[in-house]
Image (cartoon, rainbow, N blue to C red; front, side, top):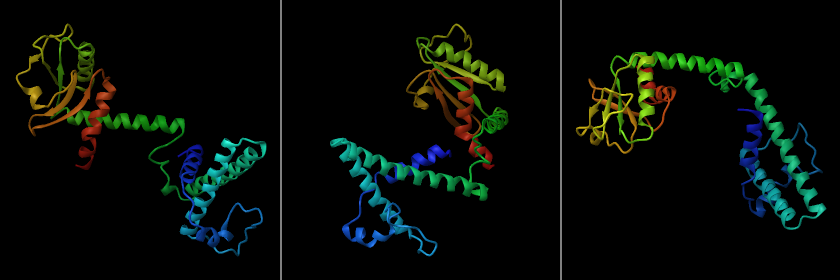
Length: 248
């Protein structure tokens, strides 16, 4: 998570809170971070989560009211007061983001850096790893599954998808079957079967549509519809059953 995202998250979580009752106003008066007459000390007792939650609710409600006043009555004084209050929150969120980053350096097991790198090099390396993992999975699945392609000759994209299906099959050494719902073929797809009720069995709603089928185990999964690319088919197959194969 980037520092900008952390700052945004902090402000989003803070701003919508509602103020607590006057009892809390009095109870927590000595805990305000932003009171100018309050100086922090190492001897001050730490805030509890409940006190911190109430503090944020009170201060965010004040900020909301100052913004409302600045919008309704945009005098120099009102706008200046709101900008100063907002700046204090931004500074506080920056401090939070800085501490967040420092904590992740000290406790890397809490970070997603190892599984989801954020650098350009790291992102490229992860994509390469994911692609290799996906190709290995497709190779394993090709032994038991085939790609099922439903189309109509009148569909605007069926001819394009037919090319994609054939390219997928060649690239990944998969078998495929094409089923026409209007008993007509395509110029680039000479071999096809006509629909004899299989589309109803699959609950087909749109064409072109793609499924992967394991006839031995009687399993089928949708992996795409409409104008789709080879990489999207591959990713969708991994999404559908990649986790299942990883567990076995």
